[in-house]
Each structure stands twice: as structure tokens, then as C-alpha cells.
Length: 163
Image 1 (spheres, rainbow, N blue to C red):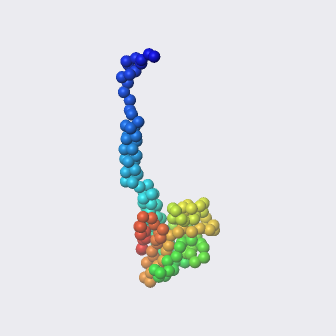
Image 2 (spheres, rainbow, N blue to C red):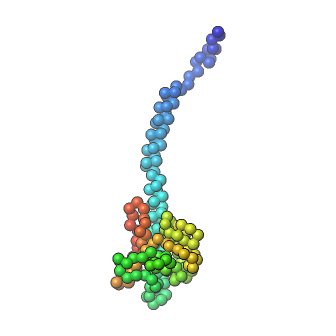
């Protein structure tokens, strides 16, 4: 039996133990990075940013409507904080779409996770005759200050705007 040439016998490589240790260290580092980044929390924050923008846009449109109609608010906004209702065209909801869309905003925004717009969940309402539910609530207090809120905010956030 012939022995291997000297050049092949001196080739150094990684042992199985060394490879497993490196893979273990990489797995630990990856798990630490994933915990630090926390993608679910990041998506929740992105959705909450959109909700805050939507709430402000709806409230601005209501304010513009009120300015054009001698201080009158759109019909369907209940009085009293205990009577906040969803903005939508279902039973017991405040149907604001036809009063606001096109004149005061191009489309009525909906909650990114739960709102049902013209073309599906999270899409804006452009056709007021179709069924919709924004999943945002609205009410006015006794002094006619309007509050629009996002009850399904994520990460424990409270999203509302009053004017």
C-alpha cells in the first residue's frame, strides 16, 4: 500500500467540532439580532403610523366640511363619548363617505389590518355605494368637538385626534 504524498498529508482543514461551534455561534448571534429588530413590533409601528395619518386626514376632512357648511358637522356623528361609532355604511355606523369623498378627500382611508374598503381589507373607500367599514370610530362631545380614533392600534398604542 502506497502512502499519500507529503503535500496531501499536510493539508489542514476544519474539524467537525470546529464547524459545529461556528454554526452554534452564528445561530446565537442571529437570534439576538432578530430579537433586537423584532419584525412584528416594526410592522405594528408602521401600521400605527398609517392609522395616525388616517385619523388626522378624516378629522381634517370633517373640519373642512364643517367650514363649508356654516359650522354644521356631517350627519351621522353621534354626540357623547360613550356613543362612538364605526365609520362605515352598516347598521349603526356613521356613513360619512358620500359627505367627504371627492370634495374633501380623494378616498376614505381604512384601518390597514381590519378596515374593509372598496377593493378589500386595508384599501381605501372610493365607491361610497359599496359596503365598507373603515374600522375607525367617530363621535362629538357636547361642545361639538369631534374625536376620530383607531380602536385597533397595535403595541398598546392609543391613537385618536380631537378638534
